[in-house]
Amino acid sequence: MAGSQDMFDAIVMADERFHGEGYREGYEEGSSLGVMEGRQHGTLHGAKIGSEIGCYQGFAFAWKCLLHSCTAEKDSRKMKVLESLIGMIQKFPYDDPTYDKLHEDLDKIRGKFKQVRALVSSCW
Image (spheres, rainbow, N blue to C red):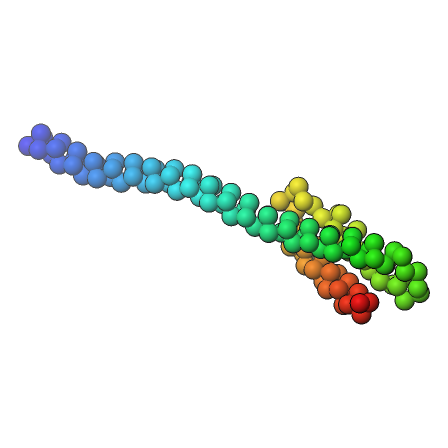
């Protein structure tokens, strides 16, 4: 009787053991795949933000050069807003993905870009 009880316990315990082993293996594989997927997503999202900021910076530098030759009083406001945009872009934390206000600063840059675009659209 004791031998059959041990065999029964081994069968019941095997199910629990295999369940535990399967869980650990699945957790390890899921963690590994999650890290790879997260890295790919972060790289893609970071590249999009970098491209967007680069576009704004190129726009700002081009208009700065165009407006630099104009010294009219009305263009001084445009230059101030343009310099403000360039300053915001230069202070943007490209190298710190853990920066708490990254999206907040990006939204401010987008707003300033829209303001600059509205001001310079009347030039040409």
